[in-house]
Image 1 (tube, rainbow, N blue to C red):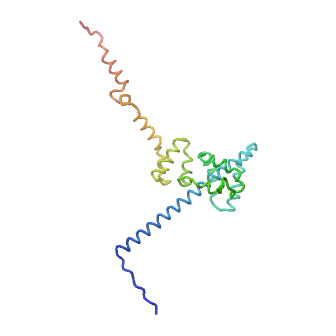
Image 2: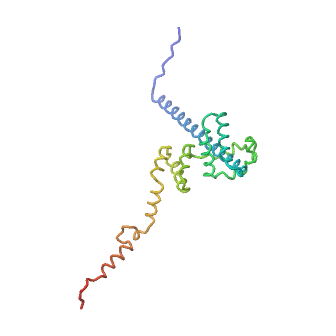
Image 3: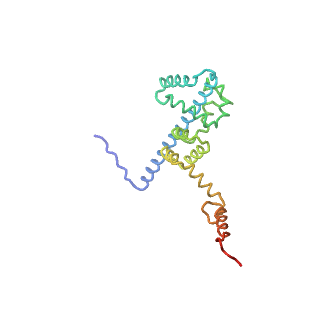
Amino acid sequence: MTKRRDVLPIDKSYSALLSGVAQLLAQARRASARSVNAVMTATYWDIGRRIVEHEQSGKARAGYGEALIDRLAADLTARFGKGFSQTNLKQMREFFLAWPIRQTLSDESKSACASPTESVKGQPVFDQLHAHPFPLAWSHYVRLLSVRNVEARAFYEAEALRGGWSVRQLDRQISSQFYERMALSRKKAALPKKARPGSTNSPCLLRSSSQKKSRRPEGHWRP
């Protein structure tokens, strides 16, 4: 005969405990997901760096870049599975070129390209690379790569981070030319009130009004 366990009554204190633990776990899962995304995004940036540097060493050969991407995509896919197609590797390459913000670290870690476990200034290269990860997920940066205007791209990146935009929200703002509309609005706001188009005090309108007043009908006699 199994021993019957007493059922703990659900009171306010238990509800508070359950709610607090559930919230803690939810926050931990979100933080874990963000951490994984940040590490992978930084890793993709470094893959792009290594591709560019390897291309530069063989740039004298025609078509070397395309051949390199094709071969690397095939080998990485065979070893790690999906996620390393030619298109993805080209995006990683472009990601490095569009966000050259870690050039100093890149220069310091060139000697460790063949051996990622080597240390630079006493710290593992992998730890150095991911010490300050990119704040957005990889899918955000893939969408941002389509924005060719550097200032617009930086604007969308900052706004996505500040507003916590999803990739879908970021795509909608880019497609609706949010940056261009904001820039136009700020440009109008920066104009002096008298010089704004449509203003009754606009110099053009004042000059036109003055010219109209100075005209007299033909044949008008003034003593």
